[in-house]
Image (tube, rainbow, N blue to C red):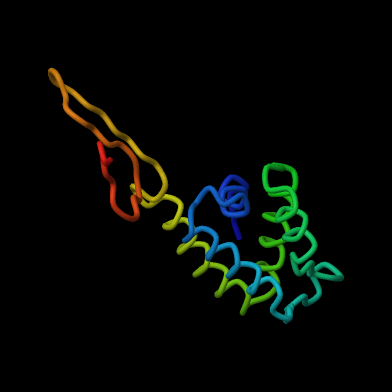
Amino acid sequence: MEAIAGELLMALAGGTAGAAGQQAWMSLRDLVRRPTAPDTGPDGPGEIPSGEEEFAALDEEAESAERAQALARALALRATYDDAFREHFAAWRSAAQDTVARPGGGNVDNSVTGGRQGTVIMGRDFHGPITFNQP
């Protein structure tokens, strides 16, 4: 199985993917904590990493590319030898990539063009009223 991008794992661990990204990160934690049912066979490695140690390490230091790659490798190895994990991980991965890649999911692109402007408010996800010139 192809390894998941470390950048995606770092974005989820670091919280830069917003609330949906945090939810995806917690669902990965739950998936990694599931008991492993490896189908090692004669060609398989001795012990398959669950990914829990690598997950905890990246959770602790989300900006570490090395830790993200270690988690990506552990997830790919586990998916190679654990059929149930592979199926659930593939579904999780698809949803997580959609969460991060969703247009407008975290980026704000504002522009004001033309002549003189009155009051302009730029931003994203405003909550509550916005008032001006209140006594």
